[in-house]
Amino acid sequence: MQILSNVVRYIISLPPAVFIGIVMGVLCLVFGGGIKNALRSACLFSVGMTGINLIMSYCVGEMQSIATALSTRLGIELSMIDGGYGSGGSGGSWMFPGAIPALCIMLVINIVFILLKWTDTMWTDVHNTWHGIYIGLLIYALTGSVLYGTIVAIITLVIMLKLGDLTAPTFQEFNGTPNIAVYATSATIPAIFTFFVMKVINKIPRLKDLKADAESIQDRFGIFGEIMVIGMLLGIILGILAGYNFKNIMMTGVVMSATMTLFPKMAALICEGIVPVTTSVIGFMNKHFSGRKLNVAVDPAMLLGDPSVMASFVILVPISIVMAMVTPGIAFIPIASLAGMPYWIGGVVPYTKGNVVHTVICMSLYIFLASLVATQLGPIVTEAARLTGRMTEAIASGITIVSWDEGGSFIGYAFVKLFKLLGLSVL
Image (cartoon, rainbow, N blue to C red; front, side):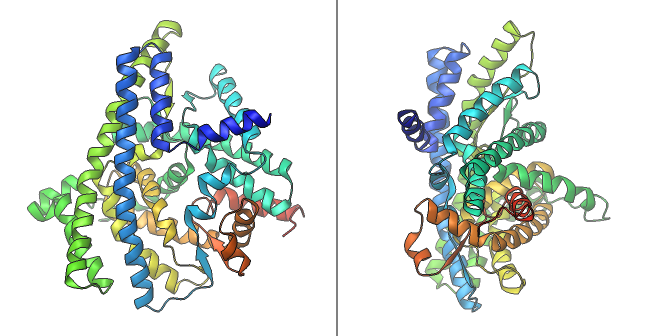
């Protein structure tokens, strides 16, 4: 069992771009796509995800510097530290003792659900099972019970499965990617939240009819509506707000412009890589299962291609900082967690149809609630980090660690409240 556990942990520890590329290539082969298509699909996926990760790292690094500068200028000093993915995330999740059993049971559940027609998606995105397993880790930290944590992890993964099925049609239609689904709650929970918020927005005169998607903005403002120019202008404004000198202001503008220009191109590579896989799956299902539809689960990076994603991200960074400053109940400045925000937005824009104004409204509300939840879950996130050997020096000094994703999870919060109500908390 230990050998199997080590092998699984090693495979899952592969960089997402490598892991997903291998999985997509193997899938294409298994479903009869041939070596040529399998190799092409694997390369396109890996190159696209690598490009997105590189651009994301560069952009997020710049935005984190701006966030730090803004918080310093505004004199914000809060009691908790944003650990981001470093406080747990995909690495720490797999150190949870119940992680491998939860993963294996979930894969069996997925097969059973497919056979019973309770789902139409193969959970090929094994890497992102960490989102559900991290919730199990939180319950382990809260209760001290591996069993409770494992059960919660499995329940959360089943919830993720159904949320993936629920959001798949909207994600597919907006992004033009048939037969794909996303299970990561970093995309699906904000998506479901936005679905309900848009019900309200669509009842408000003028606001509901406001055209603010990339195409409408460009038609209205000409050259100043082009996403490349918008990125430059937003970057310059943020640089000024951060108190940068002229050189750094202009560099921030270039970084934002490059980000908004290159992101869709990298996402397009991933979309191209999907085609051989989904074509093979469709052909196989038509031949053997009377044309039944079957989706392929992919990384939420798939959802980052629309220009409104990064445009909204740049606008939301200062909003997040100011929100932390003025809102009672939020005890941290979101800086490290900014790396997860684009994935939230990627799940939101299919429901706002790429409308930047609607996206900013929905995301501001979501960030507000997630930040409140993250503050309340801080002590549990800190204990989870300690148990998995993360940020040990900071924790030993008495610092409380928080994070947005999954440390600000609504699902995790609900389970924590349930176990406390049952009197099973040891914290």
